Image (cartoon, rainbow over all chains, first blue to last red; front, side, top):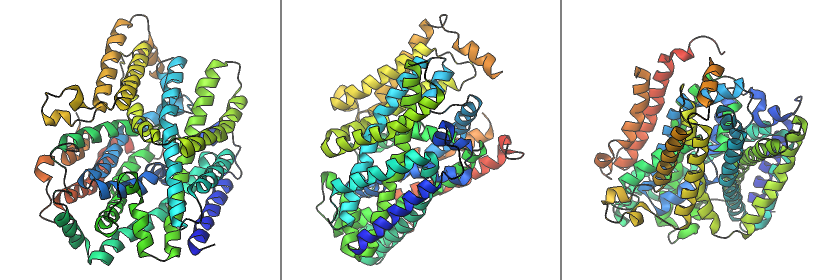
Length: 492
Length: 65
């Protein structure tokens, strides 16, 4: 066993231990298991949210974007910060409504707001459709990180199995409590490592930050800004806005808001969290340094830039720490995603289709679904091929389709009916699927339009279809639904 | 619209509203290309703005209830 492997396994064991220990002295019913008994303070929620955002994508993908795309990578900084600004206003509203109505999952929110269990099933299916590729991505990242950091001693397949089994075990025992504790270890570790790498690499290879950027600029002019076409300014703006809308619509992020003790938790988080995204800046520095130091990585191999540069630079034991941090960045979001999927399937699909199901049965099924979904995800990770990338691109667009029905439901006089909400979400998702599978862009749809419009993120089209159908159907079904009136008397 | 709502819009305007003017490499500031520096500057400002919003927001008065 080399030094790197030893470090990786020590952290894996620590994570499992903390995860399991977190459940001590608590009666693990569904409310404790999936929303932590709504007792988490600012720090826990901060780490949970950070735990979900800073995933393997941040670690590998952030450096890969800097390495392969340059300037456009900065959209990640922009969208996370702005999402927290939006979160200041919407997260307390989600939390409050969830607490008043004892909600457990994201579909609960829609089903209760629109008085439609069927809408709950739709939202639940949309969520699972978006989540599974995301879990697969985490497993894939985990496989890459561990096998690279172990210098090939552990194959990606073995790493994926170890990761999947560990997180299934602590998740079934501790639920969200386990995720919160591992999230703390993970974020402290990744923070230290990213800061270290981001400062060390440019100084080690170039003697400073500016010389590094100047060298990149000289080798690839215009690489550090947004290009004139393609990932241009209009792409940047439309993508950031769409991603901000989708941010809280991820089932696991939505769910994490339920776990807070009070609504101020989110407002405080909106202060700390934007500046915390600067951690990504250091990931970018590593990616930019790698451009001229480990050149030649293309396509999905761009994901390896951070690890390859680290292996080239450091002793195995330091690589081990990087690998361990990478392992944890897969486990924490992976566990949150698995939990959100299993809770919503059990409560909002099974619970609705089988009305006689007791709470204890639903709770048991939710835990039982964890290994099932984990196994399905492992299967697709190992056998899925490239279709996964397509699925993942769809994931963000799919959850964004929940945003219109969600935001209207916060209004005092919501004119949207359950039929409108349902139609909007379903048509929006179908549009997303069509667009993604047929590789449509705004440019291919409207070739005559100016470049500024052609570069817009194509997700906007799905959102427009969604909103239009939502409004039209709502106006036609106004009289047959009493949603807004019931809603009003309820909140009064 | 209240002042705190206007303040919350500032980060959006700052990050997304000036892109045609800030999408350039030089001058380097703090070692970063100007475009990156601009985004980083606004991320930091966002934290300050949200701290002000938090202080001004009447919803945050009183205890932790």
